[in-house]
Length: 354
Ligand SMILES: [Mg+2]
Image (cartoon, rainbow, N blue to C red):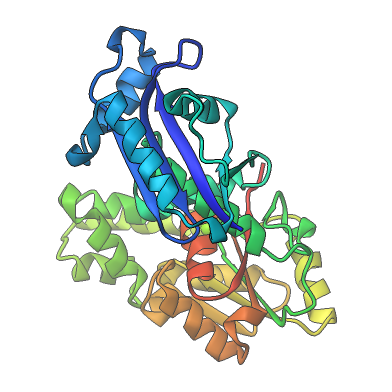
């Protein structure tokens, strides 16, 4: 069986008229078409604001309802019978709009399935984070559905993939090492003063991201960071930033479950690493708080790469002496920790603290 994911955009949920339609298959076949004429006054405010501005991205795919009907039928009949096509949708309205468009001509060898509870809503969102695409465009929504469905299907059933605290993590038998993110995962800053951010703000706004990368991928303290960024704060400003940094570092605290979780891993003989995007001054206070030192500490300022760059994950696994598929990354950032680790071939759990 080959699954094809159907998504539509329509004028509103209650007075529904089709606007666009996409079908995306596991075999990489894709269909997209949008209507030139639909009753714009029927569009809800949401559709006007979010859906309509995304139309005409594929201008050759804008057509009349009659042409859309012909095109989608032709496309469906081009899918071979032997692939046993299954049209999947996660919203009954999508199917009804297609049925209405086809006017009873749905190819008989196609089957249908409502998969709303078989795809992972969180992975659906992760697709948009990873690709930078916007939701509520039929083609991208259909691609996200295929992605979310596959993620759920290929995820080892023994592992929950999102947990509210580290105490809720259950390890699969094949996990030989656990790699933790630091801030938001093992520890938090109780009194944030953001001295580095304030330092960056002394420079141009467009330089923020390069500045962040500079201080997080080189072993620099605050003053050395300022020099590397060619920023020259007055000495009283620099001293105020340094004293704020000291106060911030003194306020780092572990989440309550962390000591027991680390001790439990140690008892089971599972290796532990910390992989963190951070500037050098944060490393020592963090490590001093951990009741048991990690086997490997992968601070971005030492390794030279920032998560989600897969090289920091690969480096950590190499240092641990485990292969990526036997390593589990746990962190609170969907993009940096979860997706980055998955892209590096590792297992991953997303920590979503309440
Ligand atoms: Mg974090």
